[in-house]
Image 1 (cartoon, rainbow, N blue to C red):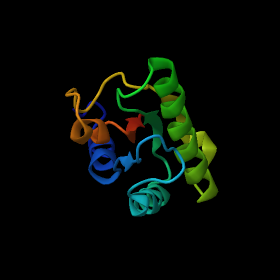
Image 2 (cartoon, rainbow, N blue to C red; image 1 turned 45 degrees about the horizontal axis):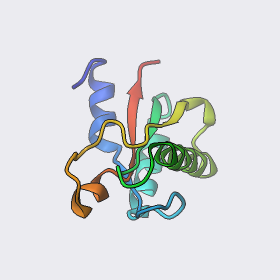
Image 3 (cartoon, helix red, strand yellow; image 1 turned 90 degrees about the horizontal axis):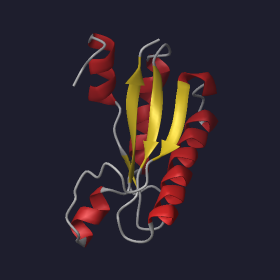
Image 4 (tube, rainbow, N blue to C red; image 1 turned 60 degrees about the horizontal axis):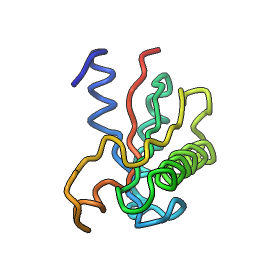
Length: 123
């Protein structure tokens, strides 16, 4: 859903999720996506955004909240280290197993929930 016009639509079309393997927050499964996101963000220097970390429902709720926060923080630091100014990142937050992409209780579904998403913020 687009609330803020063409800038948000372009952001949504070009910024993609960073996936992580089980119980990891430092080695994305799709590292090239991070680099693609950085390139696009550098070309759209006025865009601000939120970073949302998630984890699968395997394990304890508190552990998954902490893991998802570590994922969000890792992505934030990776973006900053690649030249994205920190003031463009509104907040990096971990949601744990809340708001799952897939709610079934199996390996295929759990793997879809181990990710970091981005959302546009109007200036």
